[in-house]
Length: 101
Image 1 (tube, one colour):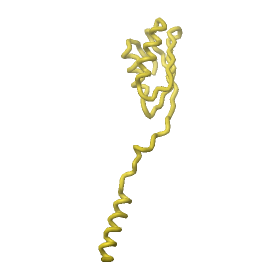
Image 2: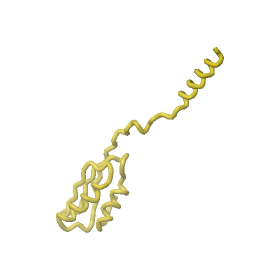
Image 3: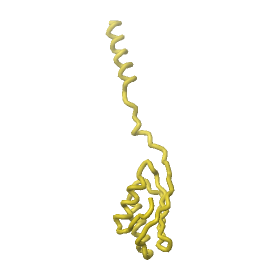
Image 4: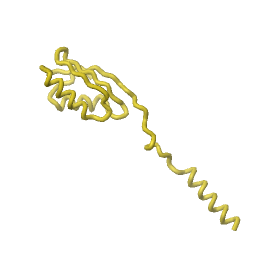
């Protein structure tokens, strides 16, 4: 009886030590990045709004501000959720050209 109890306890202890940690339950702290992009092809307020709409569809975007007068876009984003490549694709998907990355 003692031997059976010992085996059960040993199996439970071994199983508990080797169980995977639940890292998915722990959210990663945001790593906020700010970038300034040169965007060619903007001519008006509607162009700015189009870029903002496209970029805001991505996960992790904190803010986006496009300015057709100086052909720039400022983007603040969580680099755990998106990246500069995806942001550039979102802008280019709206018909604009990201000149500097």
